[in-house]
Amino acid sequence: MGVQLTPGTSLTTIEGKSVLFSVKTGESYGLNDMAAEMLKLCLEGGVDHAAERLAQDYNAPLEEIRNDINELARDLVQAKLVRLVS
Image (cartoon, rainbow, N blue to C red):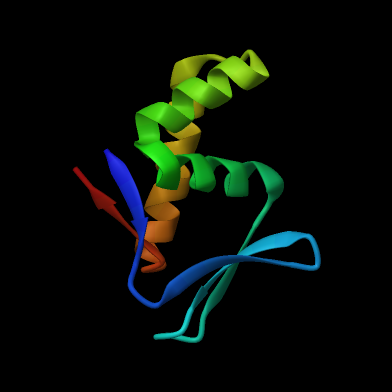
């Protein structure tokens, strides 16, 4: 499963913090460092790619990482900042 930013949404860094901003709604959503890394990897290569990479980089259980990514994706979909693609 892949992740894409919704049209009009950008991921930017402001004063060292990653922020999603929607020009359509005017809403912004701050991401902590881990959430930003998860999202960037998902945008790069999908959820599986992100989970495998983070599990390897942090020596963490793959399913735990995948669950965290899925939770982040659900939150961002609900906020209409990303959409899931197959």
